Structure formats: C-alpha cells, structure tokens
Length: 171
Image (cartoon, rainbow, N blue to C red; front, side, top):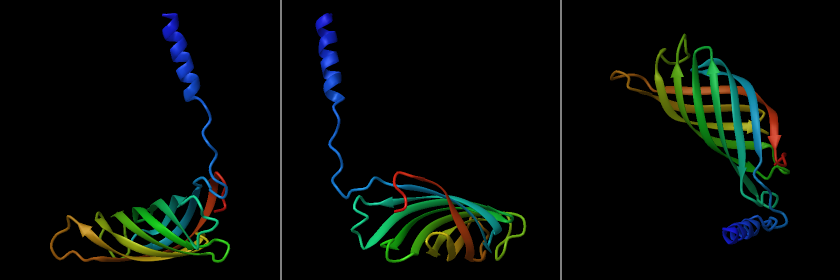
C-alpha cells in the first residue's frame, strides 16, 4: 500500500511541473467588457452590454487584428442578441473597426419599422471608432410571421464604454 502511495505521489509531482513560457511577442487573449446606449430600429432607445475577445497570439505584428464579439441590447421597444467578427487595422495605425454580426431580435411596445411581438433573425454591418462610437445597418426577417410580413431594415447608432479589461488590454 505504501508503494502505491509513493507511485501516486511521484506521478503527481511529475504532472505538476511548470509548462514552457509562451514565445516572446505572443500575447494571451484579452477580454474587454463594454456597456453603452444606442438609438435605432426596431428597439428605439436601448442599453447594451457586451464583450470583445481579440484572436491570435501575435497581434503586435499583425496588419489586421480580428476579434470575436457578443452583445445583448434591451430597449424600450425590443431587444437583441448579436454575435460577430471584427476586423481592426493594427490598433496603432487606425481606430476604425468593421464588424459583421448575426442578430436575433424580439420586439415589444412600439418598435420602429416592425410590429410588436415579432421575432426577427438577420445580420448587420457595423462601423465603429475605437469600438466607442458606432453605427450599424442590417436586415432582419420575421420568424413565424403570417405570409406577407415585411423584412425589417435595422439601423442604430450609439456609444460604448469599456468597464473592465483582463490580461493586457489595450490590444
């Protein structure tokens, strides 16, 4: 029995050895949390909470930094979930970001360009200045709506503020 305990102790010590450090210039993923407000169609005035995660270990040398983002919007006349991909020319050379998102939305109250109680699916294209000031346009199609329900042209403009940054922001 003591032999088995000794083998387990030695195996555990071997498994606990430190791993090699990442190569010079490599960066761990950063996570940036953002909150903000926007106005647009269909939700009218809304609040936003989102997260942005840059991809790639060698962002310092990349000409374009890509990141994944997700946000939730809740407004006076609707809400939405957006999942997307951002392309950001190297952060030291440009502050403009171009993003494409898949969008799932639900309307209530008195939405712009849509009927209340609708579920909408679609996509939008966003342009932002350093992820802080942004504008987007998109197309949303009604799900489970009666025949002849109209496609919604979505649009919005807003402002976001970083609230927390982990592991080495800015990007």
